[in-house]
Figure 1 (cartoon, rainbow, N blue to C red):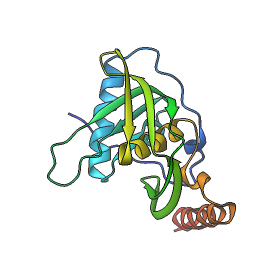
Figure 2: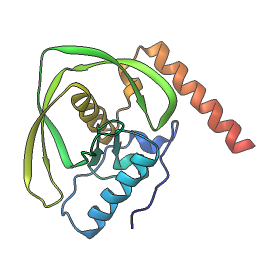
Figure 3: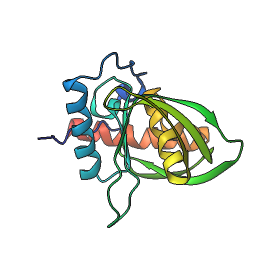
Figure 4: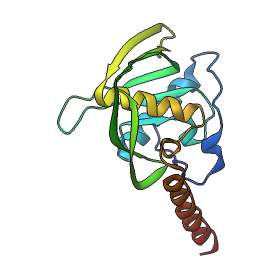
Length: 173
């Protein structure tokens, strides 16, 4: 049975680590993916990178289904963007590691991503709309980049300062 894992929250420096490629898809990776889906759904969220649950591996889980729609979970192992459209869109983003904060981020409207599935087979898919946004957001995570890094320096600094204060109060309290 899958477990709900603790999600790292800003200003935890581990969120800035660049994740290592997965060399072999084994029972440990499959268990990680199951835990990540459990954690993501419980949060609730639409995407999660392994680094957010303290595992420095290039593993991402995504499910952009909404409400009563049938779930469409997808696990991407060692994902890499191979193409991004020139068309850019600005949309509000949030993050499980930066709770209760939303910011407008510009991203490619469509992307193509190459990855391994849970069977180790190479896959390539084109993503658009919310799915494209989530893919880009989660690949950023495994590269040590947070969505606030796409905001202005002033906004980013304010968010970091706010979360540092909260963490300091929690440590003292």
